[in-house]
Image 1 (cartoon, rainbow, N blue to C red):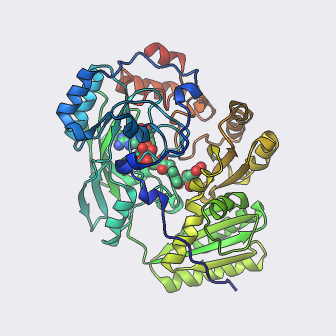
Image 2 (image 1 turned 90 degrees about the vertical axis):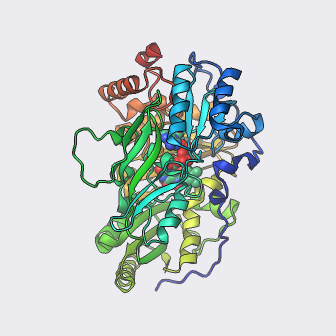
Length: 516
Ligand code: FAD
Ligand code: 2HG
Ligand code: ZN
């Protein structure tokens, strides 16, 4: 029989308490070195340097409160959430409307000023902060809900709406956002769309490429691309919205989004399981697909070292004893008696055949939240260890965990901790290699090996976080030369001066550097 959850965990959420609108109050105890110093091979292109006449224009447009130039205030916008990248922009702009975004981009385009679009600044690949002194375009004040069609479940809103706020708004109307991630308290829907964020329930609800019905974007020279369709079916030529979903702000700034929202499930159940091997994780996942079928909403795997960062550093309490591996299996359905029965039958089977050693199951909201915290706050817990080299890979399921022992051999004692966890249901592992502080020597032990390994297995070097600044040299491990040429050509056509999010997403190929 499954035991019940006995512990009470804190309800405090770091990410709910941080938003870019209040980011000037964040205390940075240790700042990362400037990106330009950490990566000296990346050279600033010949964009203009911000001058007083530029600032005058922005001040006239936005007023003095929505133009930030104070060095301390700019710091939070220059530094990413995981403190791995830092630019030195002296200009943060906070538009409140699409028209203002158009005026800003047209001005930047005409004056050859580079721009870094920024949402909640929770991105993990250095895409959301400037590399040098790019103007930061913060979307946080474009945070209005425009409309909700409750019958069809279609929400239209501005890009700066925080994911959790949208979800809370929808919950009151028995709907939900089709994505959920640990950064929900800060990340914005525009940032989610720009990164094509995956998250914890992609297995059930699919990705944003499928859930975004339409969007509005502004081109680098300030024109509005109105693709804000709310239609589920619309085969009128090219689906231009895909130019903006997952292209990380490199082709345009997303200003509005129209998104499909499923009904909020009437029945939610969550099981937290302890296992002794990765092979058993695969067995349990396979069984969950067959036994839980249409109600399976999430299947996550965590190894002991990953869980330890939340129990040791964040003092969260695990309701289970120590095991080498853990799984979270969640169901979303409409009939609790049916779902509970199904889940219990499944759990009975996996305990009986020995693949699960212990576990708890609950449908009490506070207990489910406590369990989810153990999974969602691993990223935050890792910040306490030191510098984390993060890898977000898609791998064939049987190889999901294979890099952990390989990396332990390669990096050895240089690492404080090497662990793997992630979205087993989507074949997406998050590998974290933690060291006391950033070291090029350790980096060279990891890269490009890790990407070569992934490529040989036909995996992806970025399952969900994107390419950002950090992976531009490695795109060819996941894309053919022809595909890279097309990507680069599209960038050249849509942003001929290359002002939007430079040094990111595209490989620094000869063609691109000739162009810019
Ligand atoms: P930002 O970080 O501000 O920006 C990300 C990229 O999008 C940048 O390139 C930026 O230039 C661009 N951008 C932002 N807004 C716009 C816009 N309006 N128009 C054009 N471009 C824009 N990611 C996942 O996929 N799955 C997860 O499960 C997940 N969990 C996370 C958990 C934690 C604790 C943290 C810190 C991060 C997590 N992430 C996850 C990564 C991150 O939260 C996502 O990438 C998220 O979608 C970024 O949204 P944001 O608003 O913070 O965007
Ligand atoms: C998650 O699934 C996120 O928790 C973050 O994608 C992963 O921190 C990471 O590496
Ligand atoms: Zn993830």
